[in-house]
Length: 140
Image 1 (cartoon, rainbow, N blue to C red):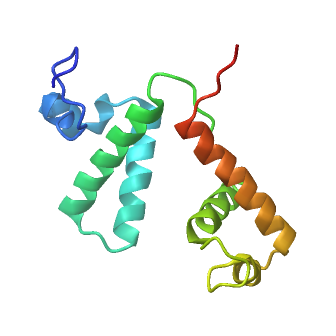
Image 2 (cartoon, helix red, strand yellow):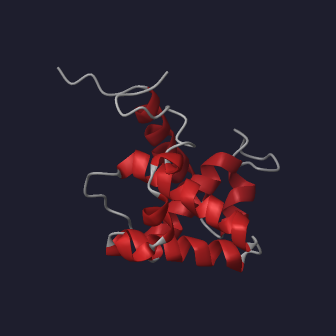
């Protein structure tokens, strides 16, 4: 189903609706968007993704990010806070629900060089984030 602007909710066709000159000529892009695009493109190429494929993936990433946080100020942590956030998300995704299993609390604590209590804190925090996404607060 098309939305108000004639774009489908799939996000993949958004770039097809842009003027080719705007997509190709980065000088027409806002400065921060061009910087984000160049950074993403360089990182994709660094991990071995070839030119044409890296450009397509970069464009898809920009569309996905813009659909999530476009049109508003958005805080992105950097440095240690960003690394910890990524680490915490990985811990939550890797945890198998056990204490002693191959991906249990003890194994994760050893792998990430954290205490078991810290792993439990991370799991609790990440679980709250996931629940909040699925069950918005009913502030009355």
